[in-house]
Length: 360
Image 1 (cartoon, rainbow, N blue to C red):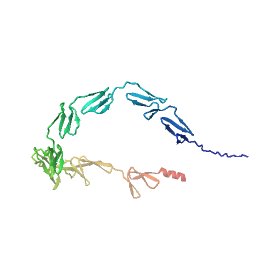
Image 2: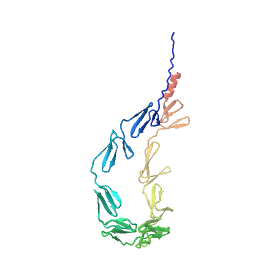
Image 3: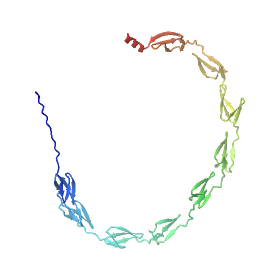
Image 4: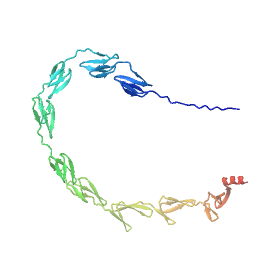
């Protein structure tokens, strides 16, 4: 007899202890800083990096960090002590109630200055000043409207005296100087407050539209060109054709028996084929067509020539006509071949043969 013993496993969740450090509580796994040291809480115990911190001017530094002391650099060591370089520092400068370090550059009005070991060295330009009090050195300039003012080495300004462009008002719209506008067909521009248009030509008008010289329009089949005096110069061609008591427009095509005609500036231009009339149909010279098994051609002089083959007959089956040379179905399973009016050969389809074999 097989005895089965079931064992029940009981799992208990393990609880990790918190840490208390400097009156602060941290959970297991928390990381935090003690001044410059990295600390870690592990099941109630706090572990911190073993290095010491450095202190300077109430700032805490960790090993490797540094601060500048004039021209020297002081770096924090792992023992909590700073180690500083011992460079001999150059003196700064006092200028315009400002203190500048050695090598520093600054501006004094329009001049550039630099501090070198307690001494100030500056360029010696005579400065120019604009109405806003901005300072410029010789060679610099600024714009006043459309004029340019340049600072001279004497500290005085030299300004150009150019007539400045003005705006124009046209059809209640404001145009800037130099801006172009089309008036009728003319390209006009705003020049010093006045709209100026060319006077060397006039515009032509058609249907209230203005055209510049050299432009074309069409008038029926004629073309008209605008000249510089504002007048139209038009061709004078006939635009309709009269043919066989019918009227046609320029460019219109129409048929005359087997020929195609086109109305071209009053003249009907037609192709010149000899036409053949055959059994109520009209054919042009060189055209061919089939009649039953024969082929016919329209010959020069309007004569029709056809081959004279004896054509095979179609098959009549239960009131339906089937063409010669074609297979046709006489019921759902049997198909026959038509040859010159007779059903020469009939057979079952493969689908019906398989059904008959199965039903055998």
